[in-house]
Amino acid sequence: MNEILTQLKPEKIVYYFGEILKIPRPSKKEEKIRAYLVQFGKEQNLETIVDNTGNVLIRKPATAGMENHKGVILQSHMDMVCEKNRDSKHNFDTDPIEVHIEDGWLKAKDTTLGADNGIGVAAELAVLSSNDLVHGPLECLFTVNEETGLTGAFGLSSDFLKGSILLNLDSEDDGQFFIGCAGGIDTIIQYPYHPEKVPAGLQSFKLTIKGLKGGHSGDDINKGLANANKLLDRFLFEYAPNLSLRLSSFDGGNLRNAIAREAEAIVCIPLSAQATLEQKVKEYEKIVAHEFHTTEANLSFTCQKEAMPNSVMPQQEQEAIVNALLACPHGVLRMSADIPNFVETSTNLAAVKTKKDHILITTNQRSSVESAKYGAAHRVAACFKMIGATVEHSDGYPGWNPNPNSPVLKIIMSTFKDLFHQDGVALAIHAGLECGLFSEKYPNLDIASFGPTMRGAHSPDEKLNIETVERFWKLTTEVLKRI
Image 1: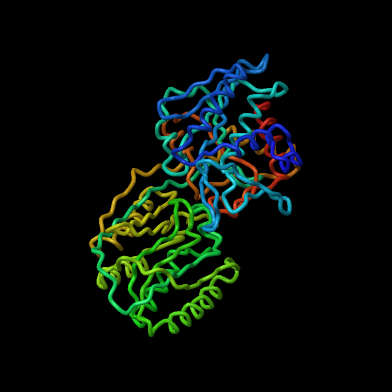
Image 2: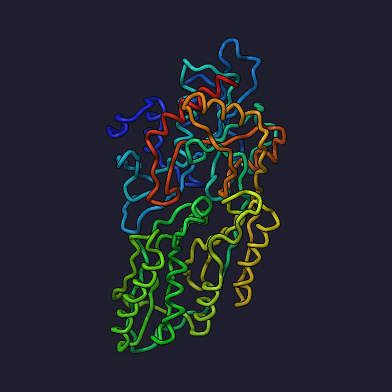
């Protein structure tokens, strides 16, 4: 096990998390972690099943005398968000995650940590391999591709699970217990253009926005964080005409469920405009750094000379896409009228990528109100349909309607109070969870979600609070006993 992890407790969950850190597991590439789980199940002599979607289910018999208690399903997802800083050499397909401890938090080096949802997977493996726990009939479900499409939850058959209680271990706040979540939908835009030769007499530059925090497009959308795509496009809108600037490419953001941390554009300007460009970049950096001084202390906007590109966008098409990107909403669209300080509806301008003959734009909308989810998606679509872009929507996924009278929630809340002498809080979350799909397929399931404290999920700033991992373990095992 990683030497750094040997300092942490409880040993069993930390051991398995260390093993998971060694295994590449990007979304849609879960083959290695699946093989590890299947081998684990065989070594433990436990019933292990892989369904047609690639989900893994491991069953463990009840402790003697607990056979007639309600069956419990522990659930986590195998995949992780693979985000890294632009200068990182890390290869998520082959390399283990490197970790270090900083002020009581476990962090990765220039990449996402994968505690979302690796720590949940580790907890399930620790439960399955422990011989001193008390529990009823137990199922541990490990789903695939939660982060980029909820594939595992969508593909789960309605007769795969036997338990009547499901504990989702994919939440990120110690003492907060989730009983509802937002639904979501992706809106994907393709804007075709006709590349043309770079006019004579121009010099090429790379404009780069970086140093932003990024974060989870659901959980962090209301925290006042900057979006690199929006900031870079705003510069192009405000300064391109006076600089006679021609856009060659735009590359910002990556994942639909992450707020864009970095963006860059290759632009061409007349040689005589170089000094003006450099001046405007410095001025704009000061402007946006002031606007986001409380949330984006490391914001940076730079320009540097770049090798001449092969082509630029035609002027009219450049103006159209820059205008549409500026008009495209990003962030909170409406706060809940029913739940204090809860985001009802939001949208994320996740990624803008220049391809050979088109620009690909990825956005994601979330809402706890189904009609508002589609309303937000249509609002985004309208911004780009007006310039002749092609727009497609994903199938989306449903929200999870809260049940404040959940019997398992009452057990969790009372257990938390007894263990830690604190009151827990029952909440809904704006992020998407697989629980909405589970409740749709298994309407009688009693579901709750909880986990240790994490921050910066879906960004290289992701970190896991070490102290809360032990609390998470104590709570999980005691809840299983009391059920």
